[in-house]
Length: 171
Image 1: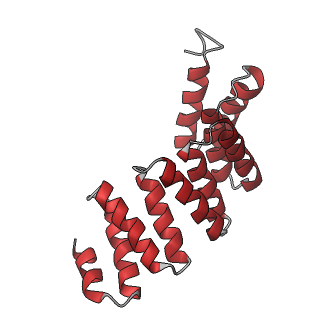
Image 2: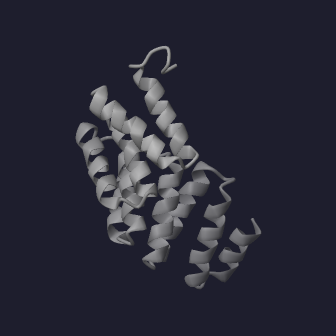
Image 3: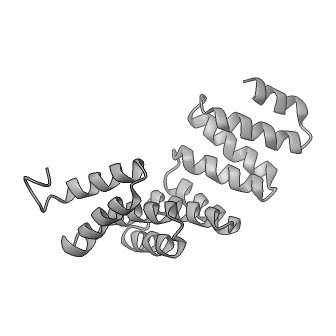
C-alpha cells in the first residue's frame, strides 16, 4: 500500500502496529515518527502506539511523554491511561500505575486488561481486598480469563479465605 500511495497514513500506522507485535521496535518507531514528523499526523492513536513501543524499549520518559500528548489530545482515551499505567508499573511506581489503571477502566469499563493490571498492581501493594474486586470485575467481563482466577485465589489465600481460594484454583 505504501508503495502505491506513499502518504497513506493508515498504512504507516498499521505497519508500525504490526512491527510492534513482532517486537521490531526500531522499525515501528520509524513508522510512527514518519507519521508524526513527515506526514504531520499527530493523533492520540499514533502517540499511544509510539508510547507502547517506548515502554517495551524501557524508555519510560518518552513513553510517559507520549501518553501525556495522547491524553492532551483526547482525555477520554482509556488506552492512553492504560499505557501510562504500564509504564509506571514497569518503573515500580505502583501508586501511579494504580491511578492510571483506575482512570483507564473508568473511561473504558469493559477494558479487561485494565481491570486485570489494576488487580495485579493492587496485589503487589498488598491491597488484597481491592485486588479481589478488580479480579471479580475481570471474571464478570470474561468468565474464561484464567489468570483472574489464579490471581484472585492468591489474594483470597493471603486474606485467610482458604476455601474461596481453593474454589478459584479449582475453577
